[in-house]
Image (cartoon, rainbow, N blue to C red):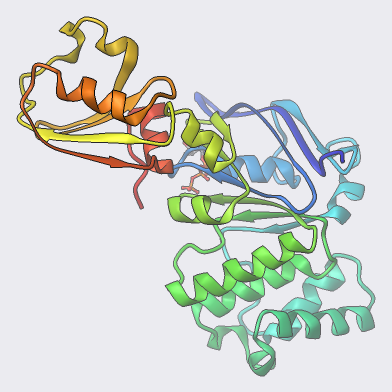
Amino acid sequence: MPPILQVTGLAKSFGEIRAVDGISFAIRAGEIHGLLGPNGAGKTTTISMLCGLLRPDAGTVVVAGEDFWLQPAKCKKVLGVVPQEIALYEELTGRENLEFWGRLAGLERGAARIRAGELLGALQLSDRGGDPVKQYSGGMKRRINLGAALMHRPRLLLLDEPTVGIDPQARASVLEFIRGLGAEGTAILYTTHYLEEAESFCHRIGIIDHGRLLAEGTLAELQGRLGGDRLFILEGAFAEVDPAVWPGFLEQFRVIQRTDRQWVVSPLTPRDPSDCLRELLALPIRVENVTLKKPSLNDVFLQLTGRGLRE
Ligand code: ATP
């Protein structure tokens, strides 16, 4: 099955800032593809180039087999975009907002009315559809914002941090709804800086930092980059310790995070955890405690960038 979105070598600079620096990825029908990165990583700039708001300096965007920048009108029919900033008319009702965006996307009046009703139901807003948006909570506005992008039943949905600033319950309901769209076959690009969302929700994840895609794959594939499914957390007095002087250590292990009291150590290649543990305990340091854990996306991010990605 060919991808619905194929991005190749996409790049954009603003003056000296290389906001997006040559990124490539593909998304297929039914796939929720996360783009995970800290503030300023280049996520919004990427989305803007995928939907026609910004012209790339280099690279191609192919949507359902068509080059976006050669056939923008054709591609926009396939595409729905949910911007980070809520783009609604506060004085209009939720239903009127949906109908307005549906008409803009080319629906006839009657079709827009029917579709708005369907989406209000699916988004659990039927009872509030007649109220002006200015009376809505943040989570309700987010849901209408999402509905506005879905009026024309796009096969590809671009979501730019759709759960920022909403409470956990509203977040869960938005995620559930988006998961349902994926299950129905919509291809979804989902940018986020929330690790748990990327871990629990996305089929594939691209890790982006300083405009570059540092790694891409399923959660299991990304965890596999850390040499297997275990990390070792050593506790002790490590202030003066330099692992570079231990013969062979850095060929076997990497210290992905260190403080004076704690190291997080990853084997460089998949190995039996008990062998690793034996070698770590034989090191010339006094280890007070060892725990094992499964690598999280934060650990993957740490290994790739030397920094953590915390909310
Ligand atoms: P956030 O999570 O904060 O939205 P992001 O990953 O979406 O971050 P972008 O908004 O794409 O990041 O920004 C990437 C880089 O490009 C940043 O350094 C930002 O300051 C810069 N940038 C973005 N838009 C512009 C612009 N119009 N003019 C100048 N610099 C810009």
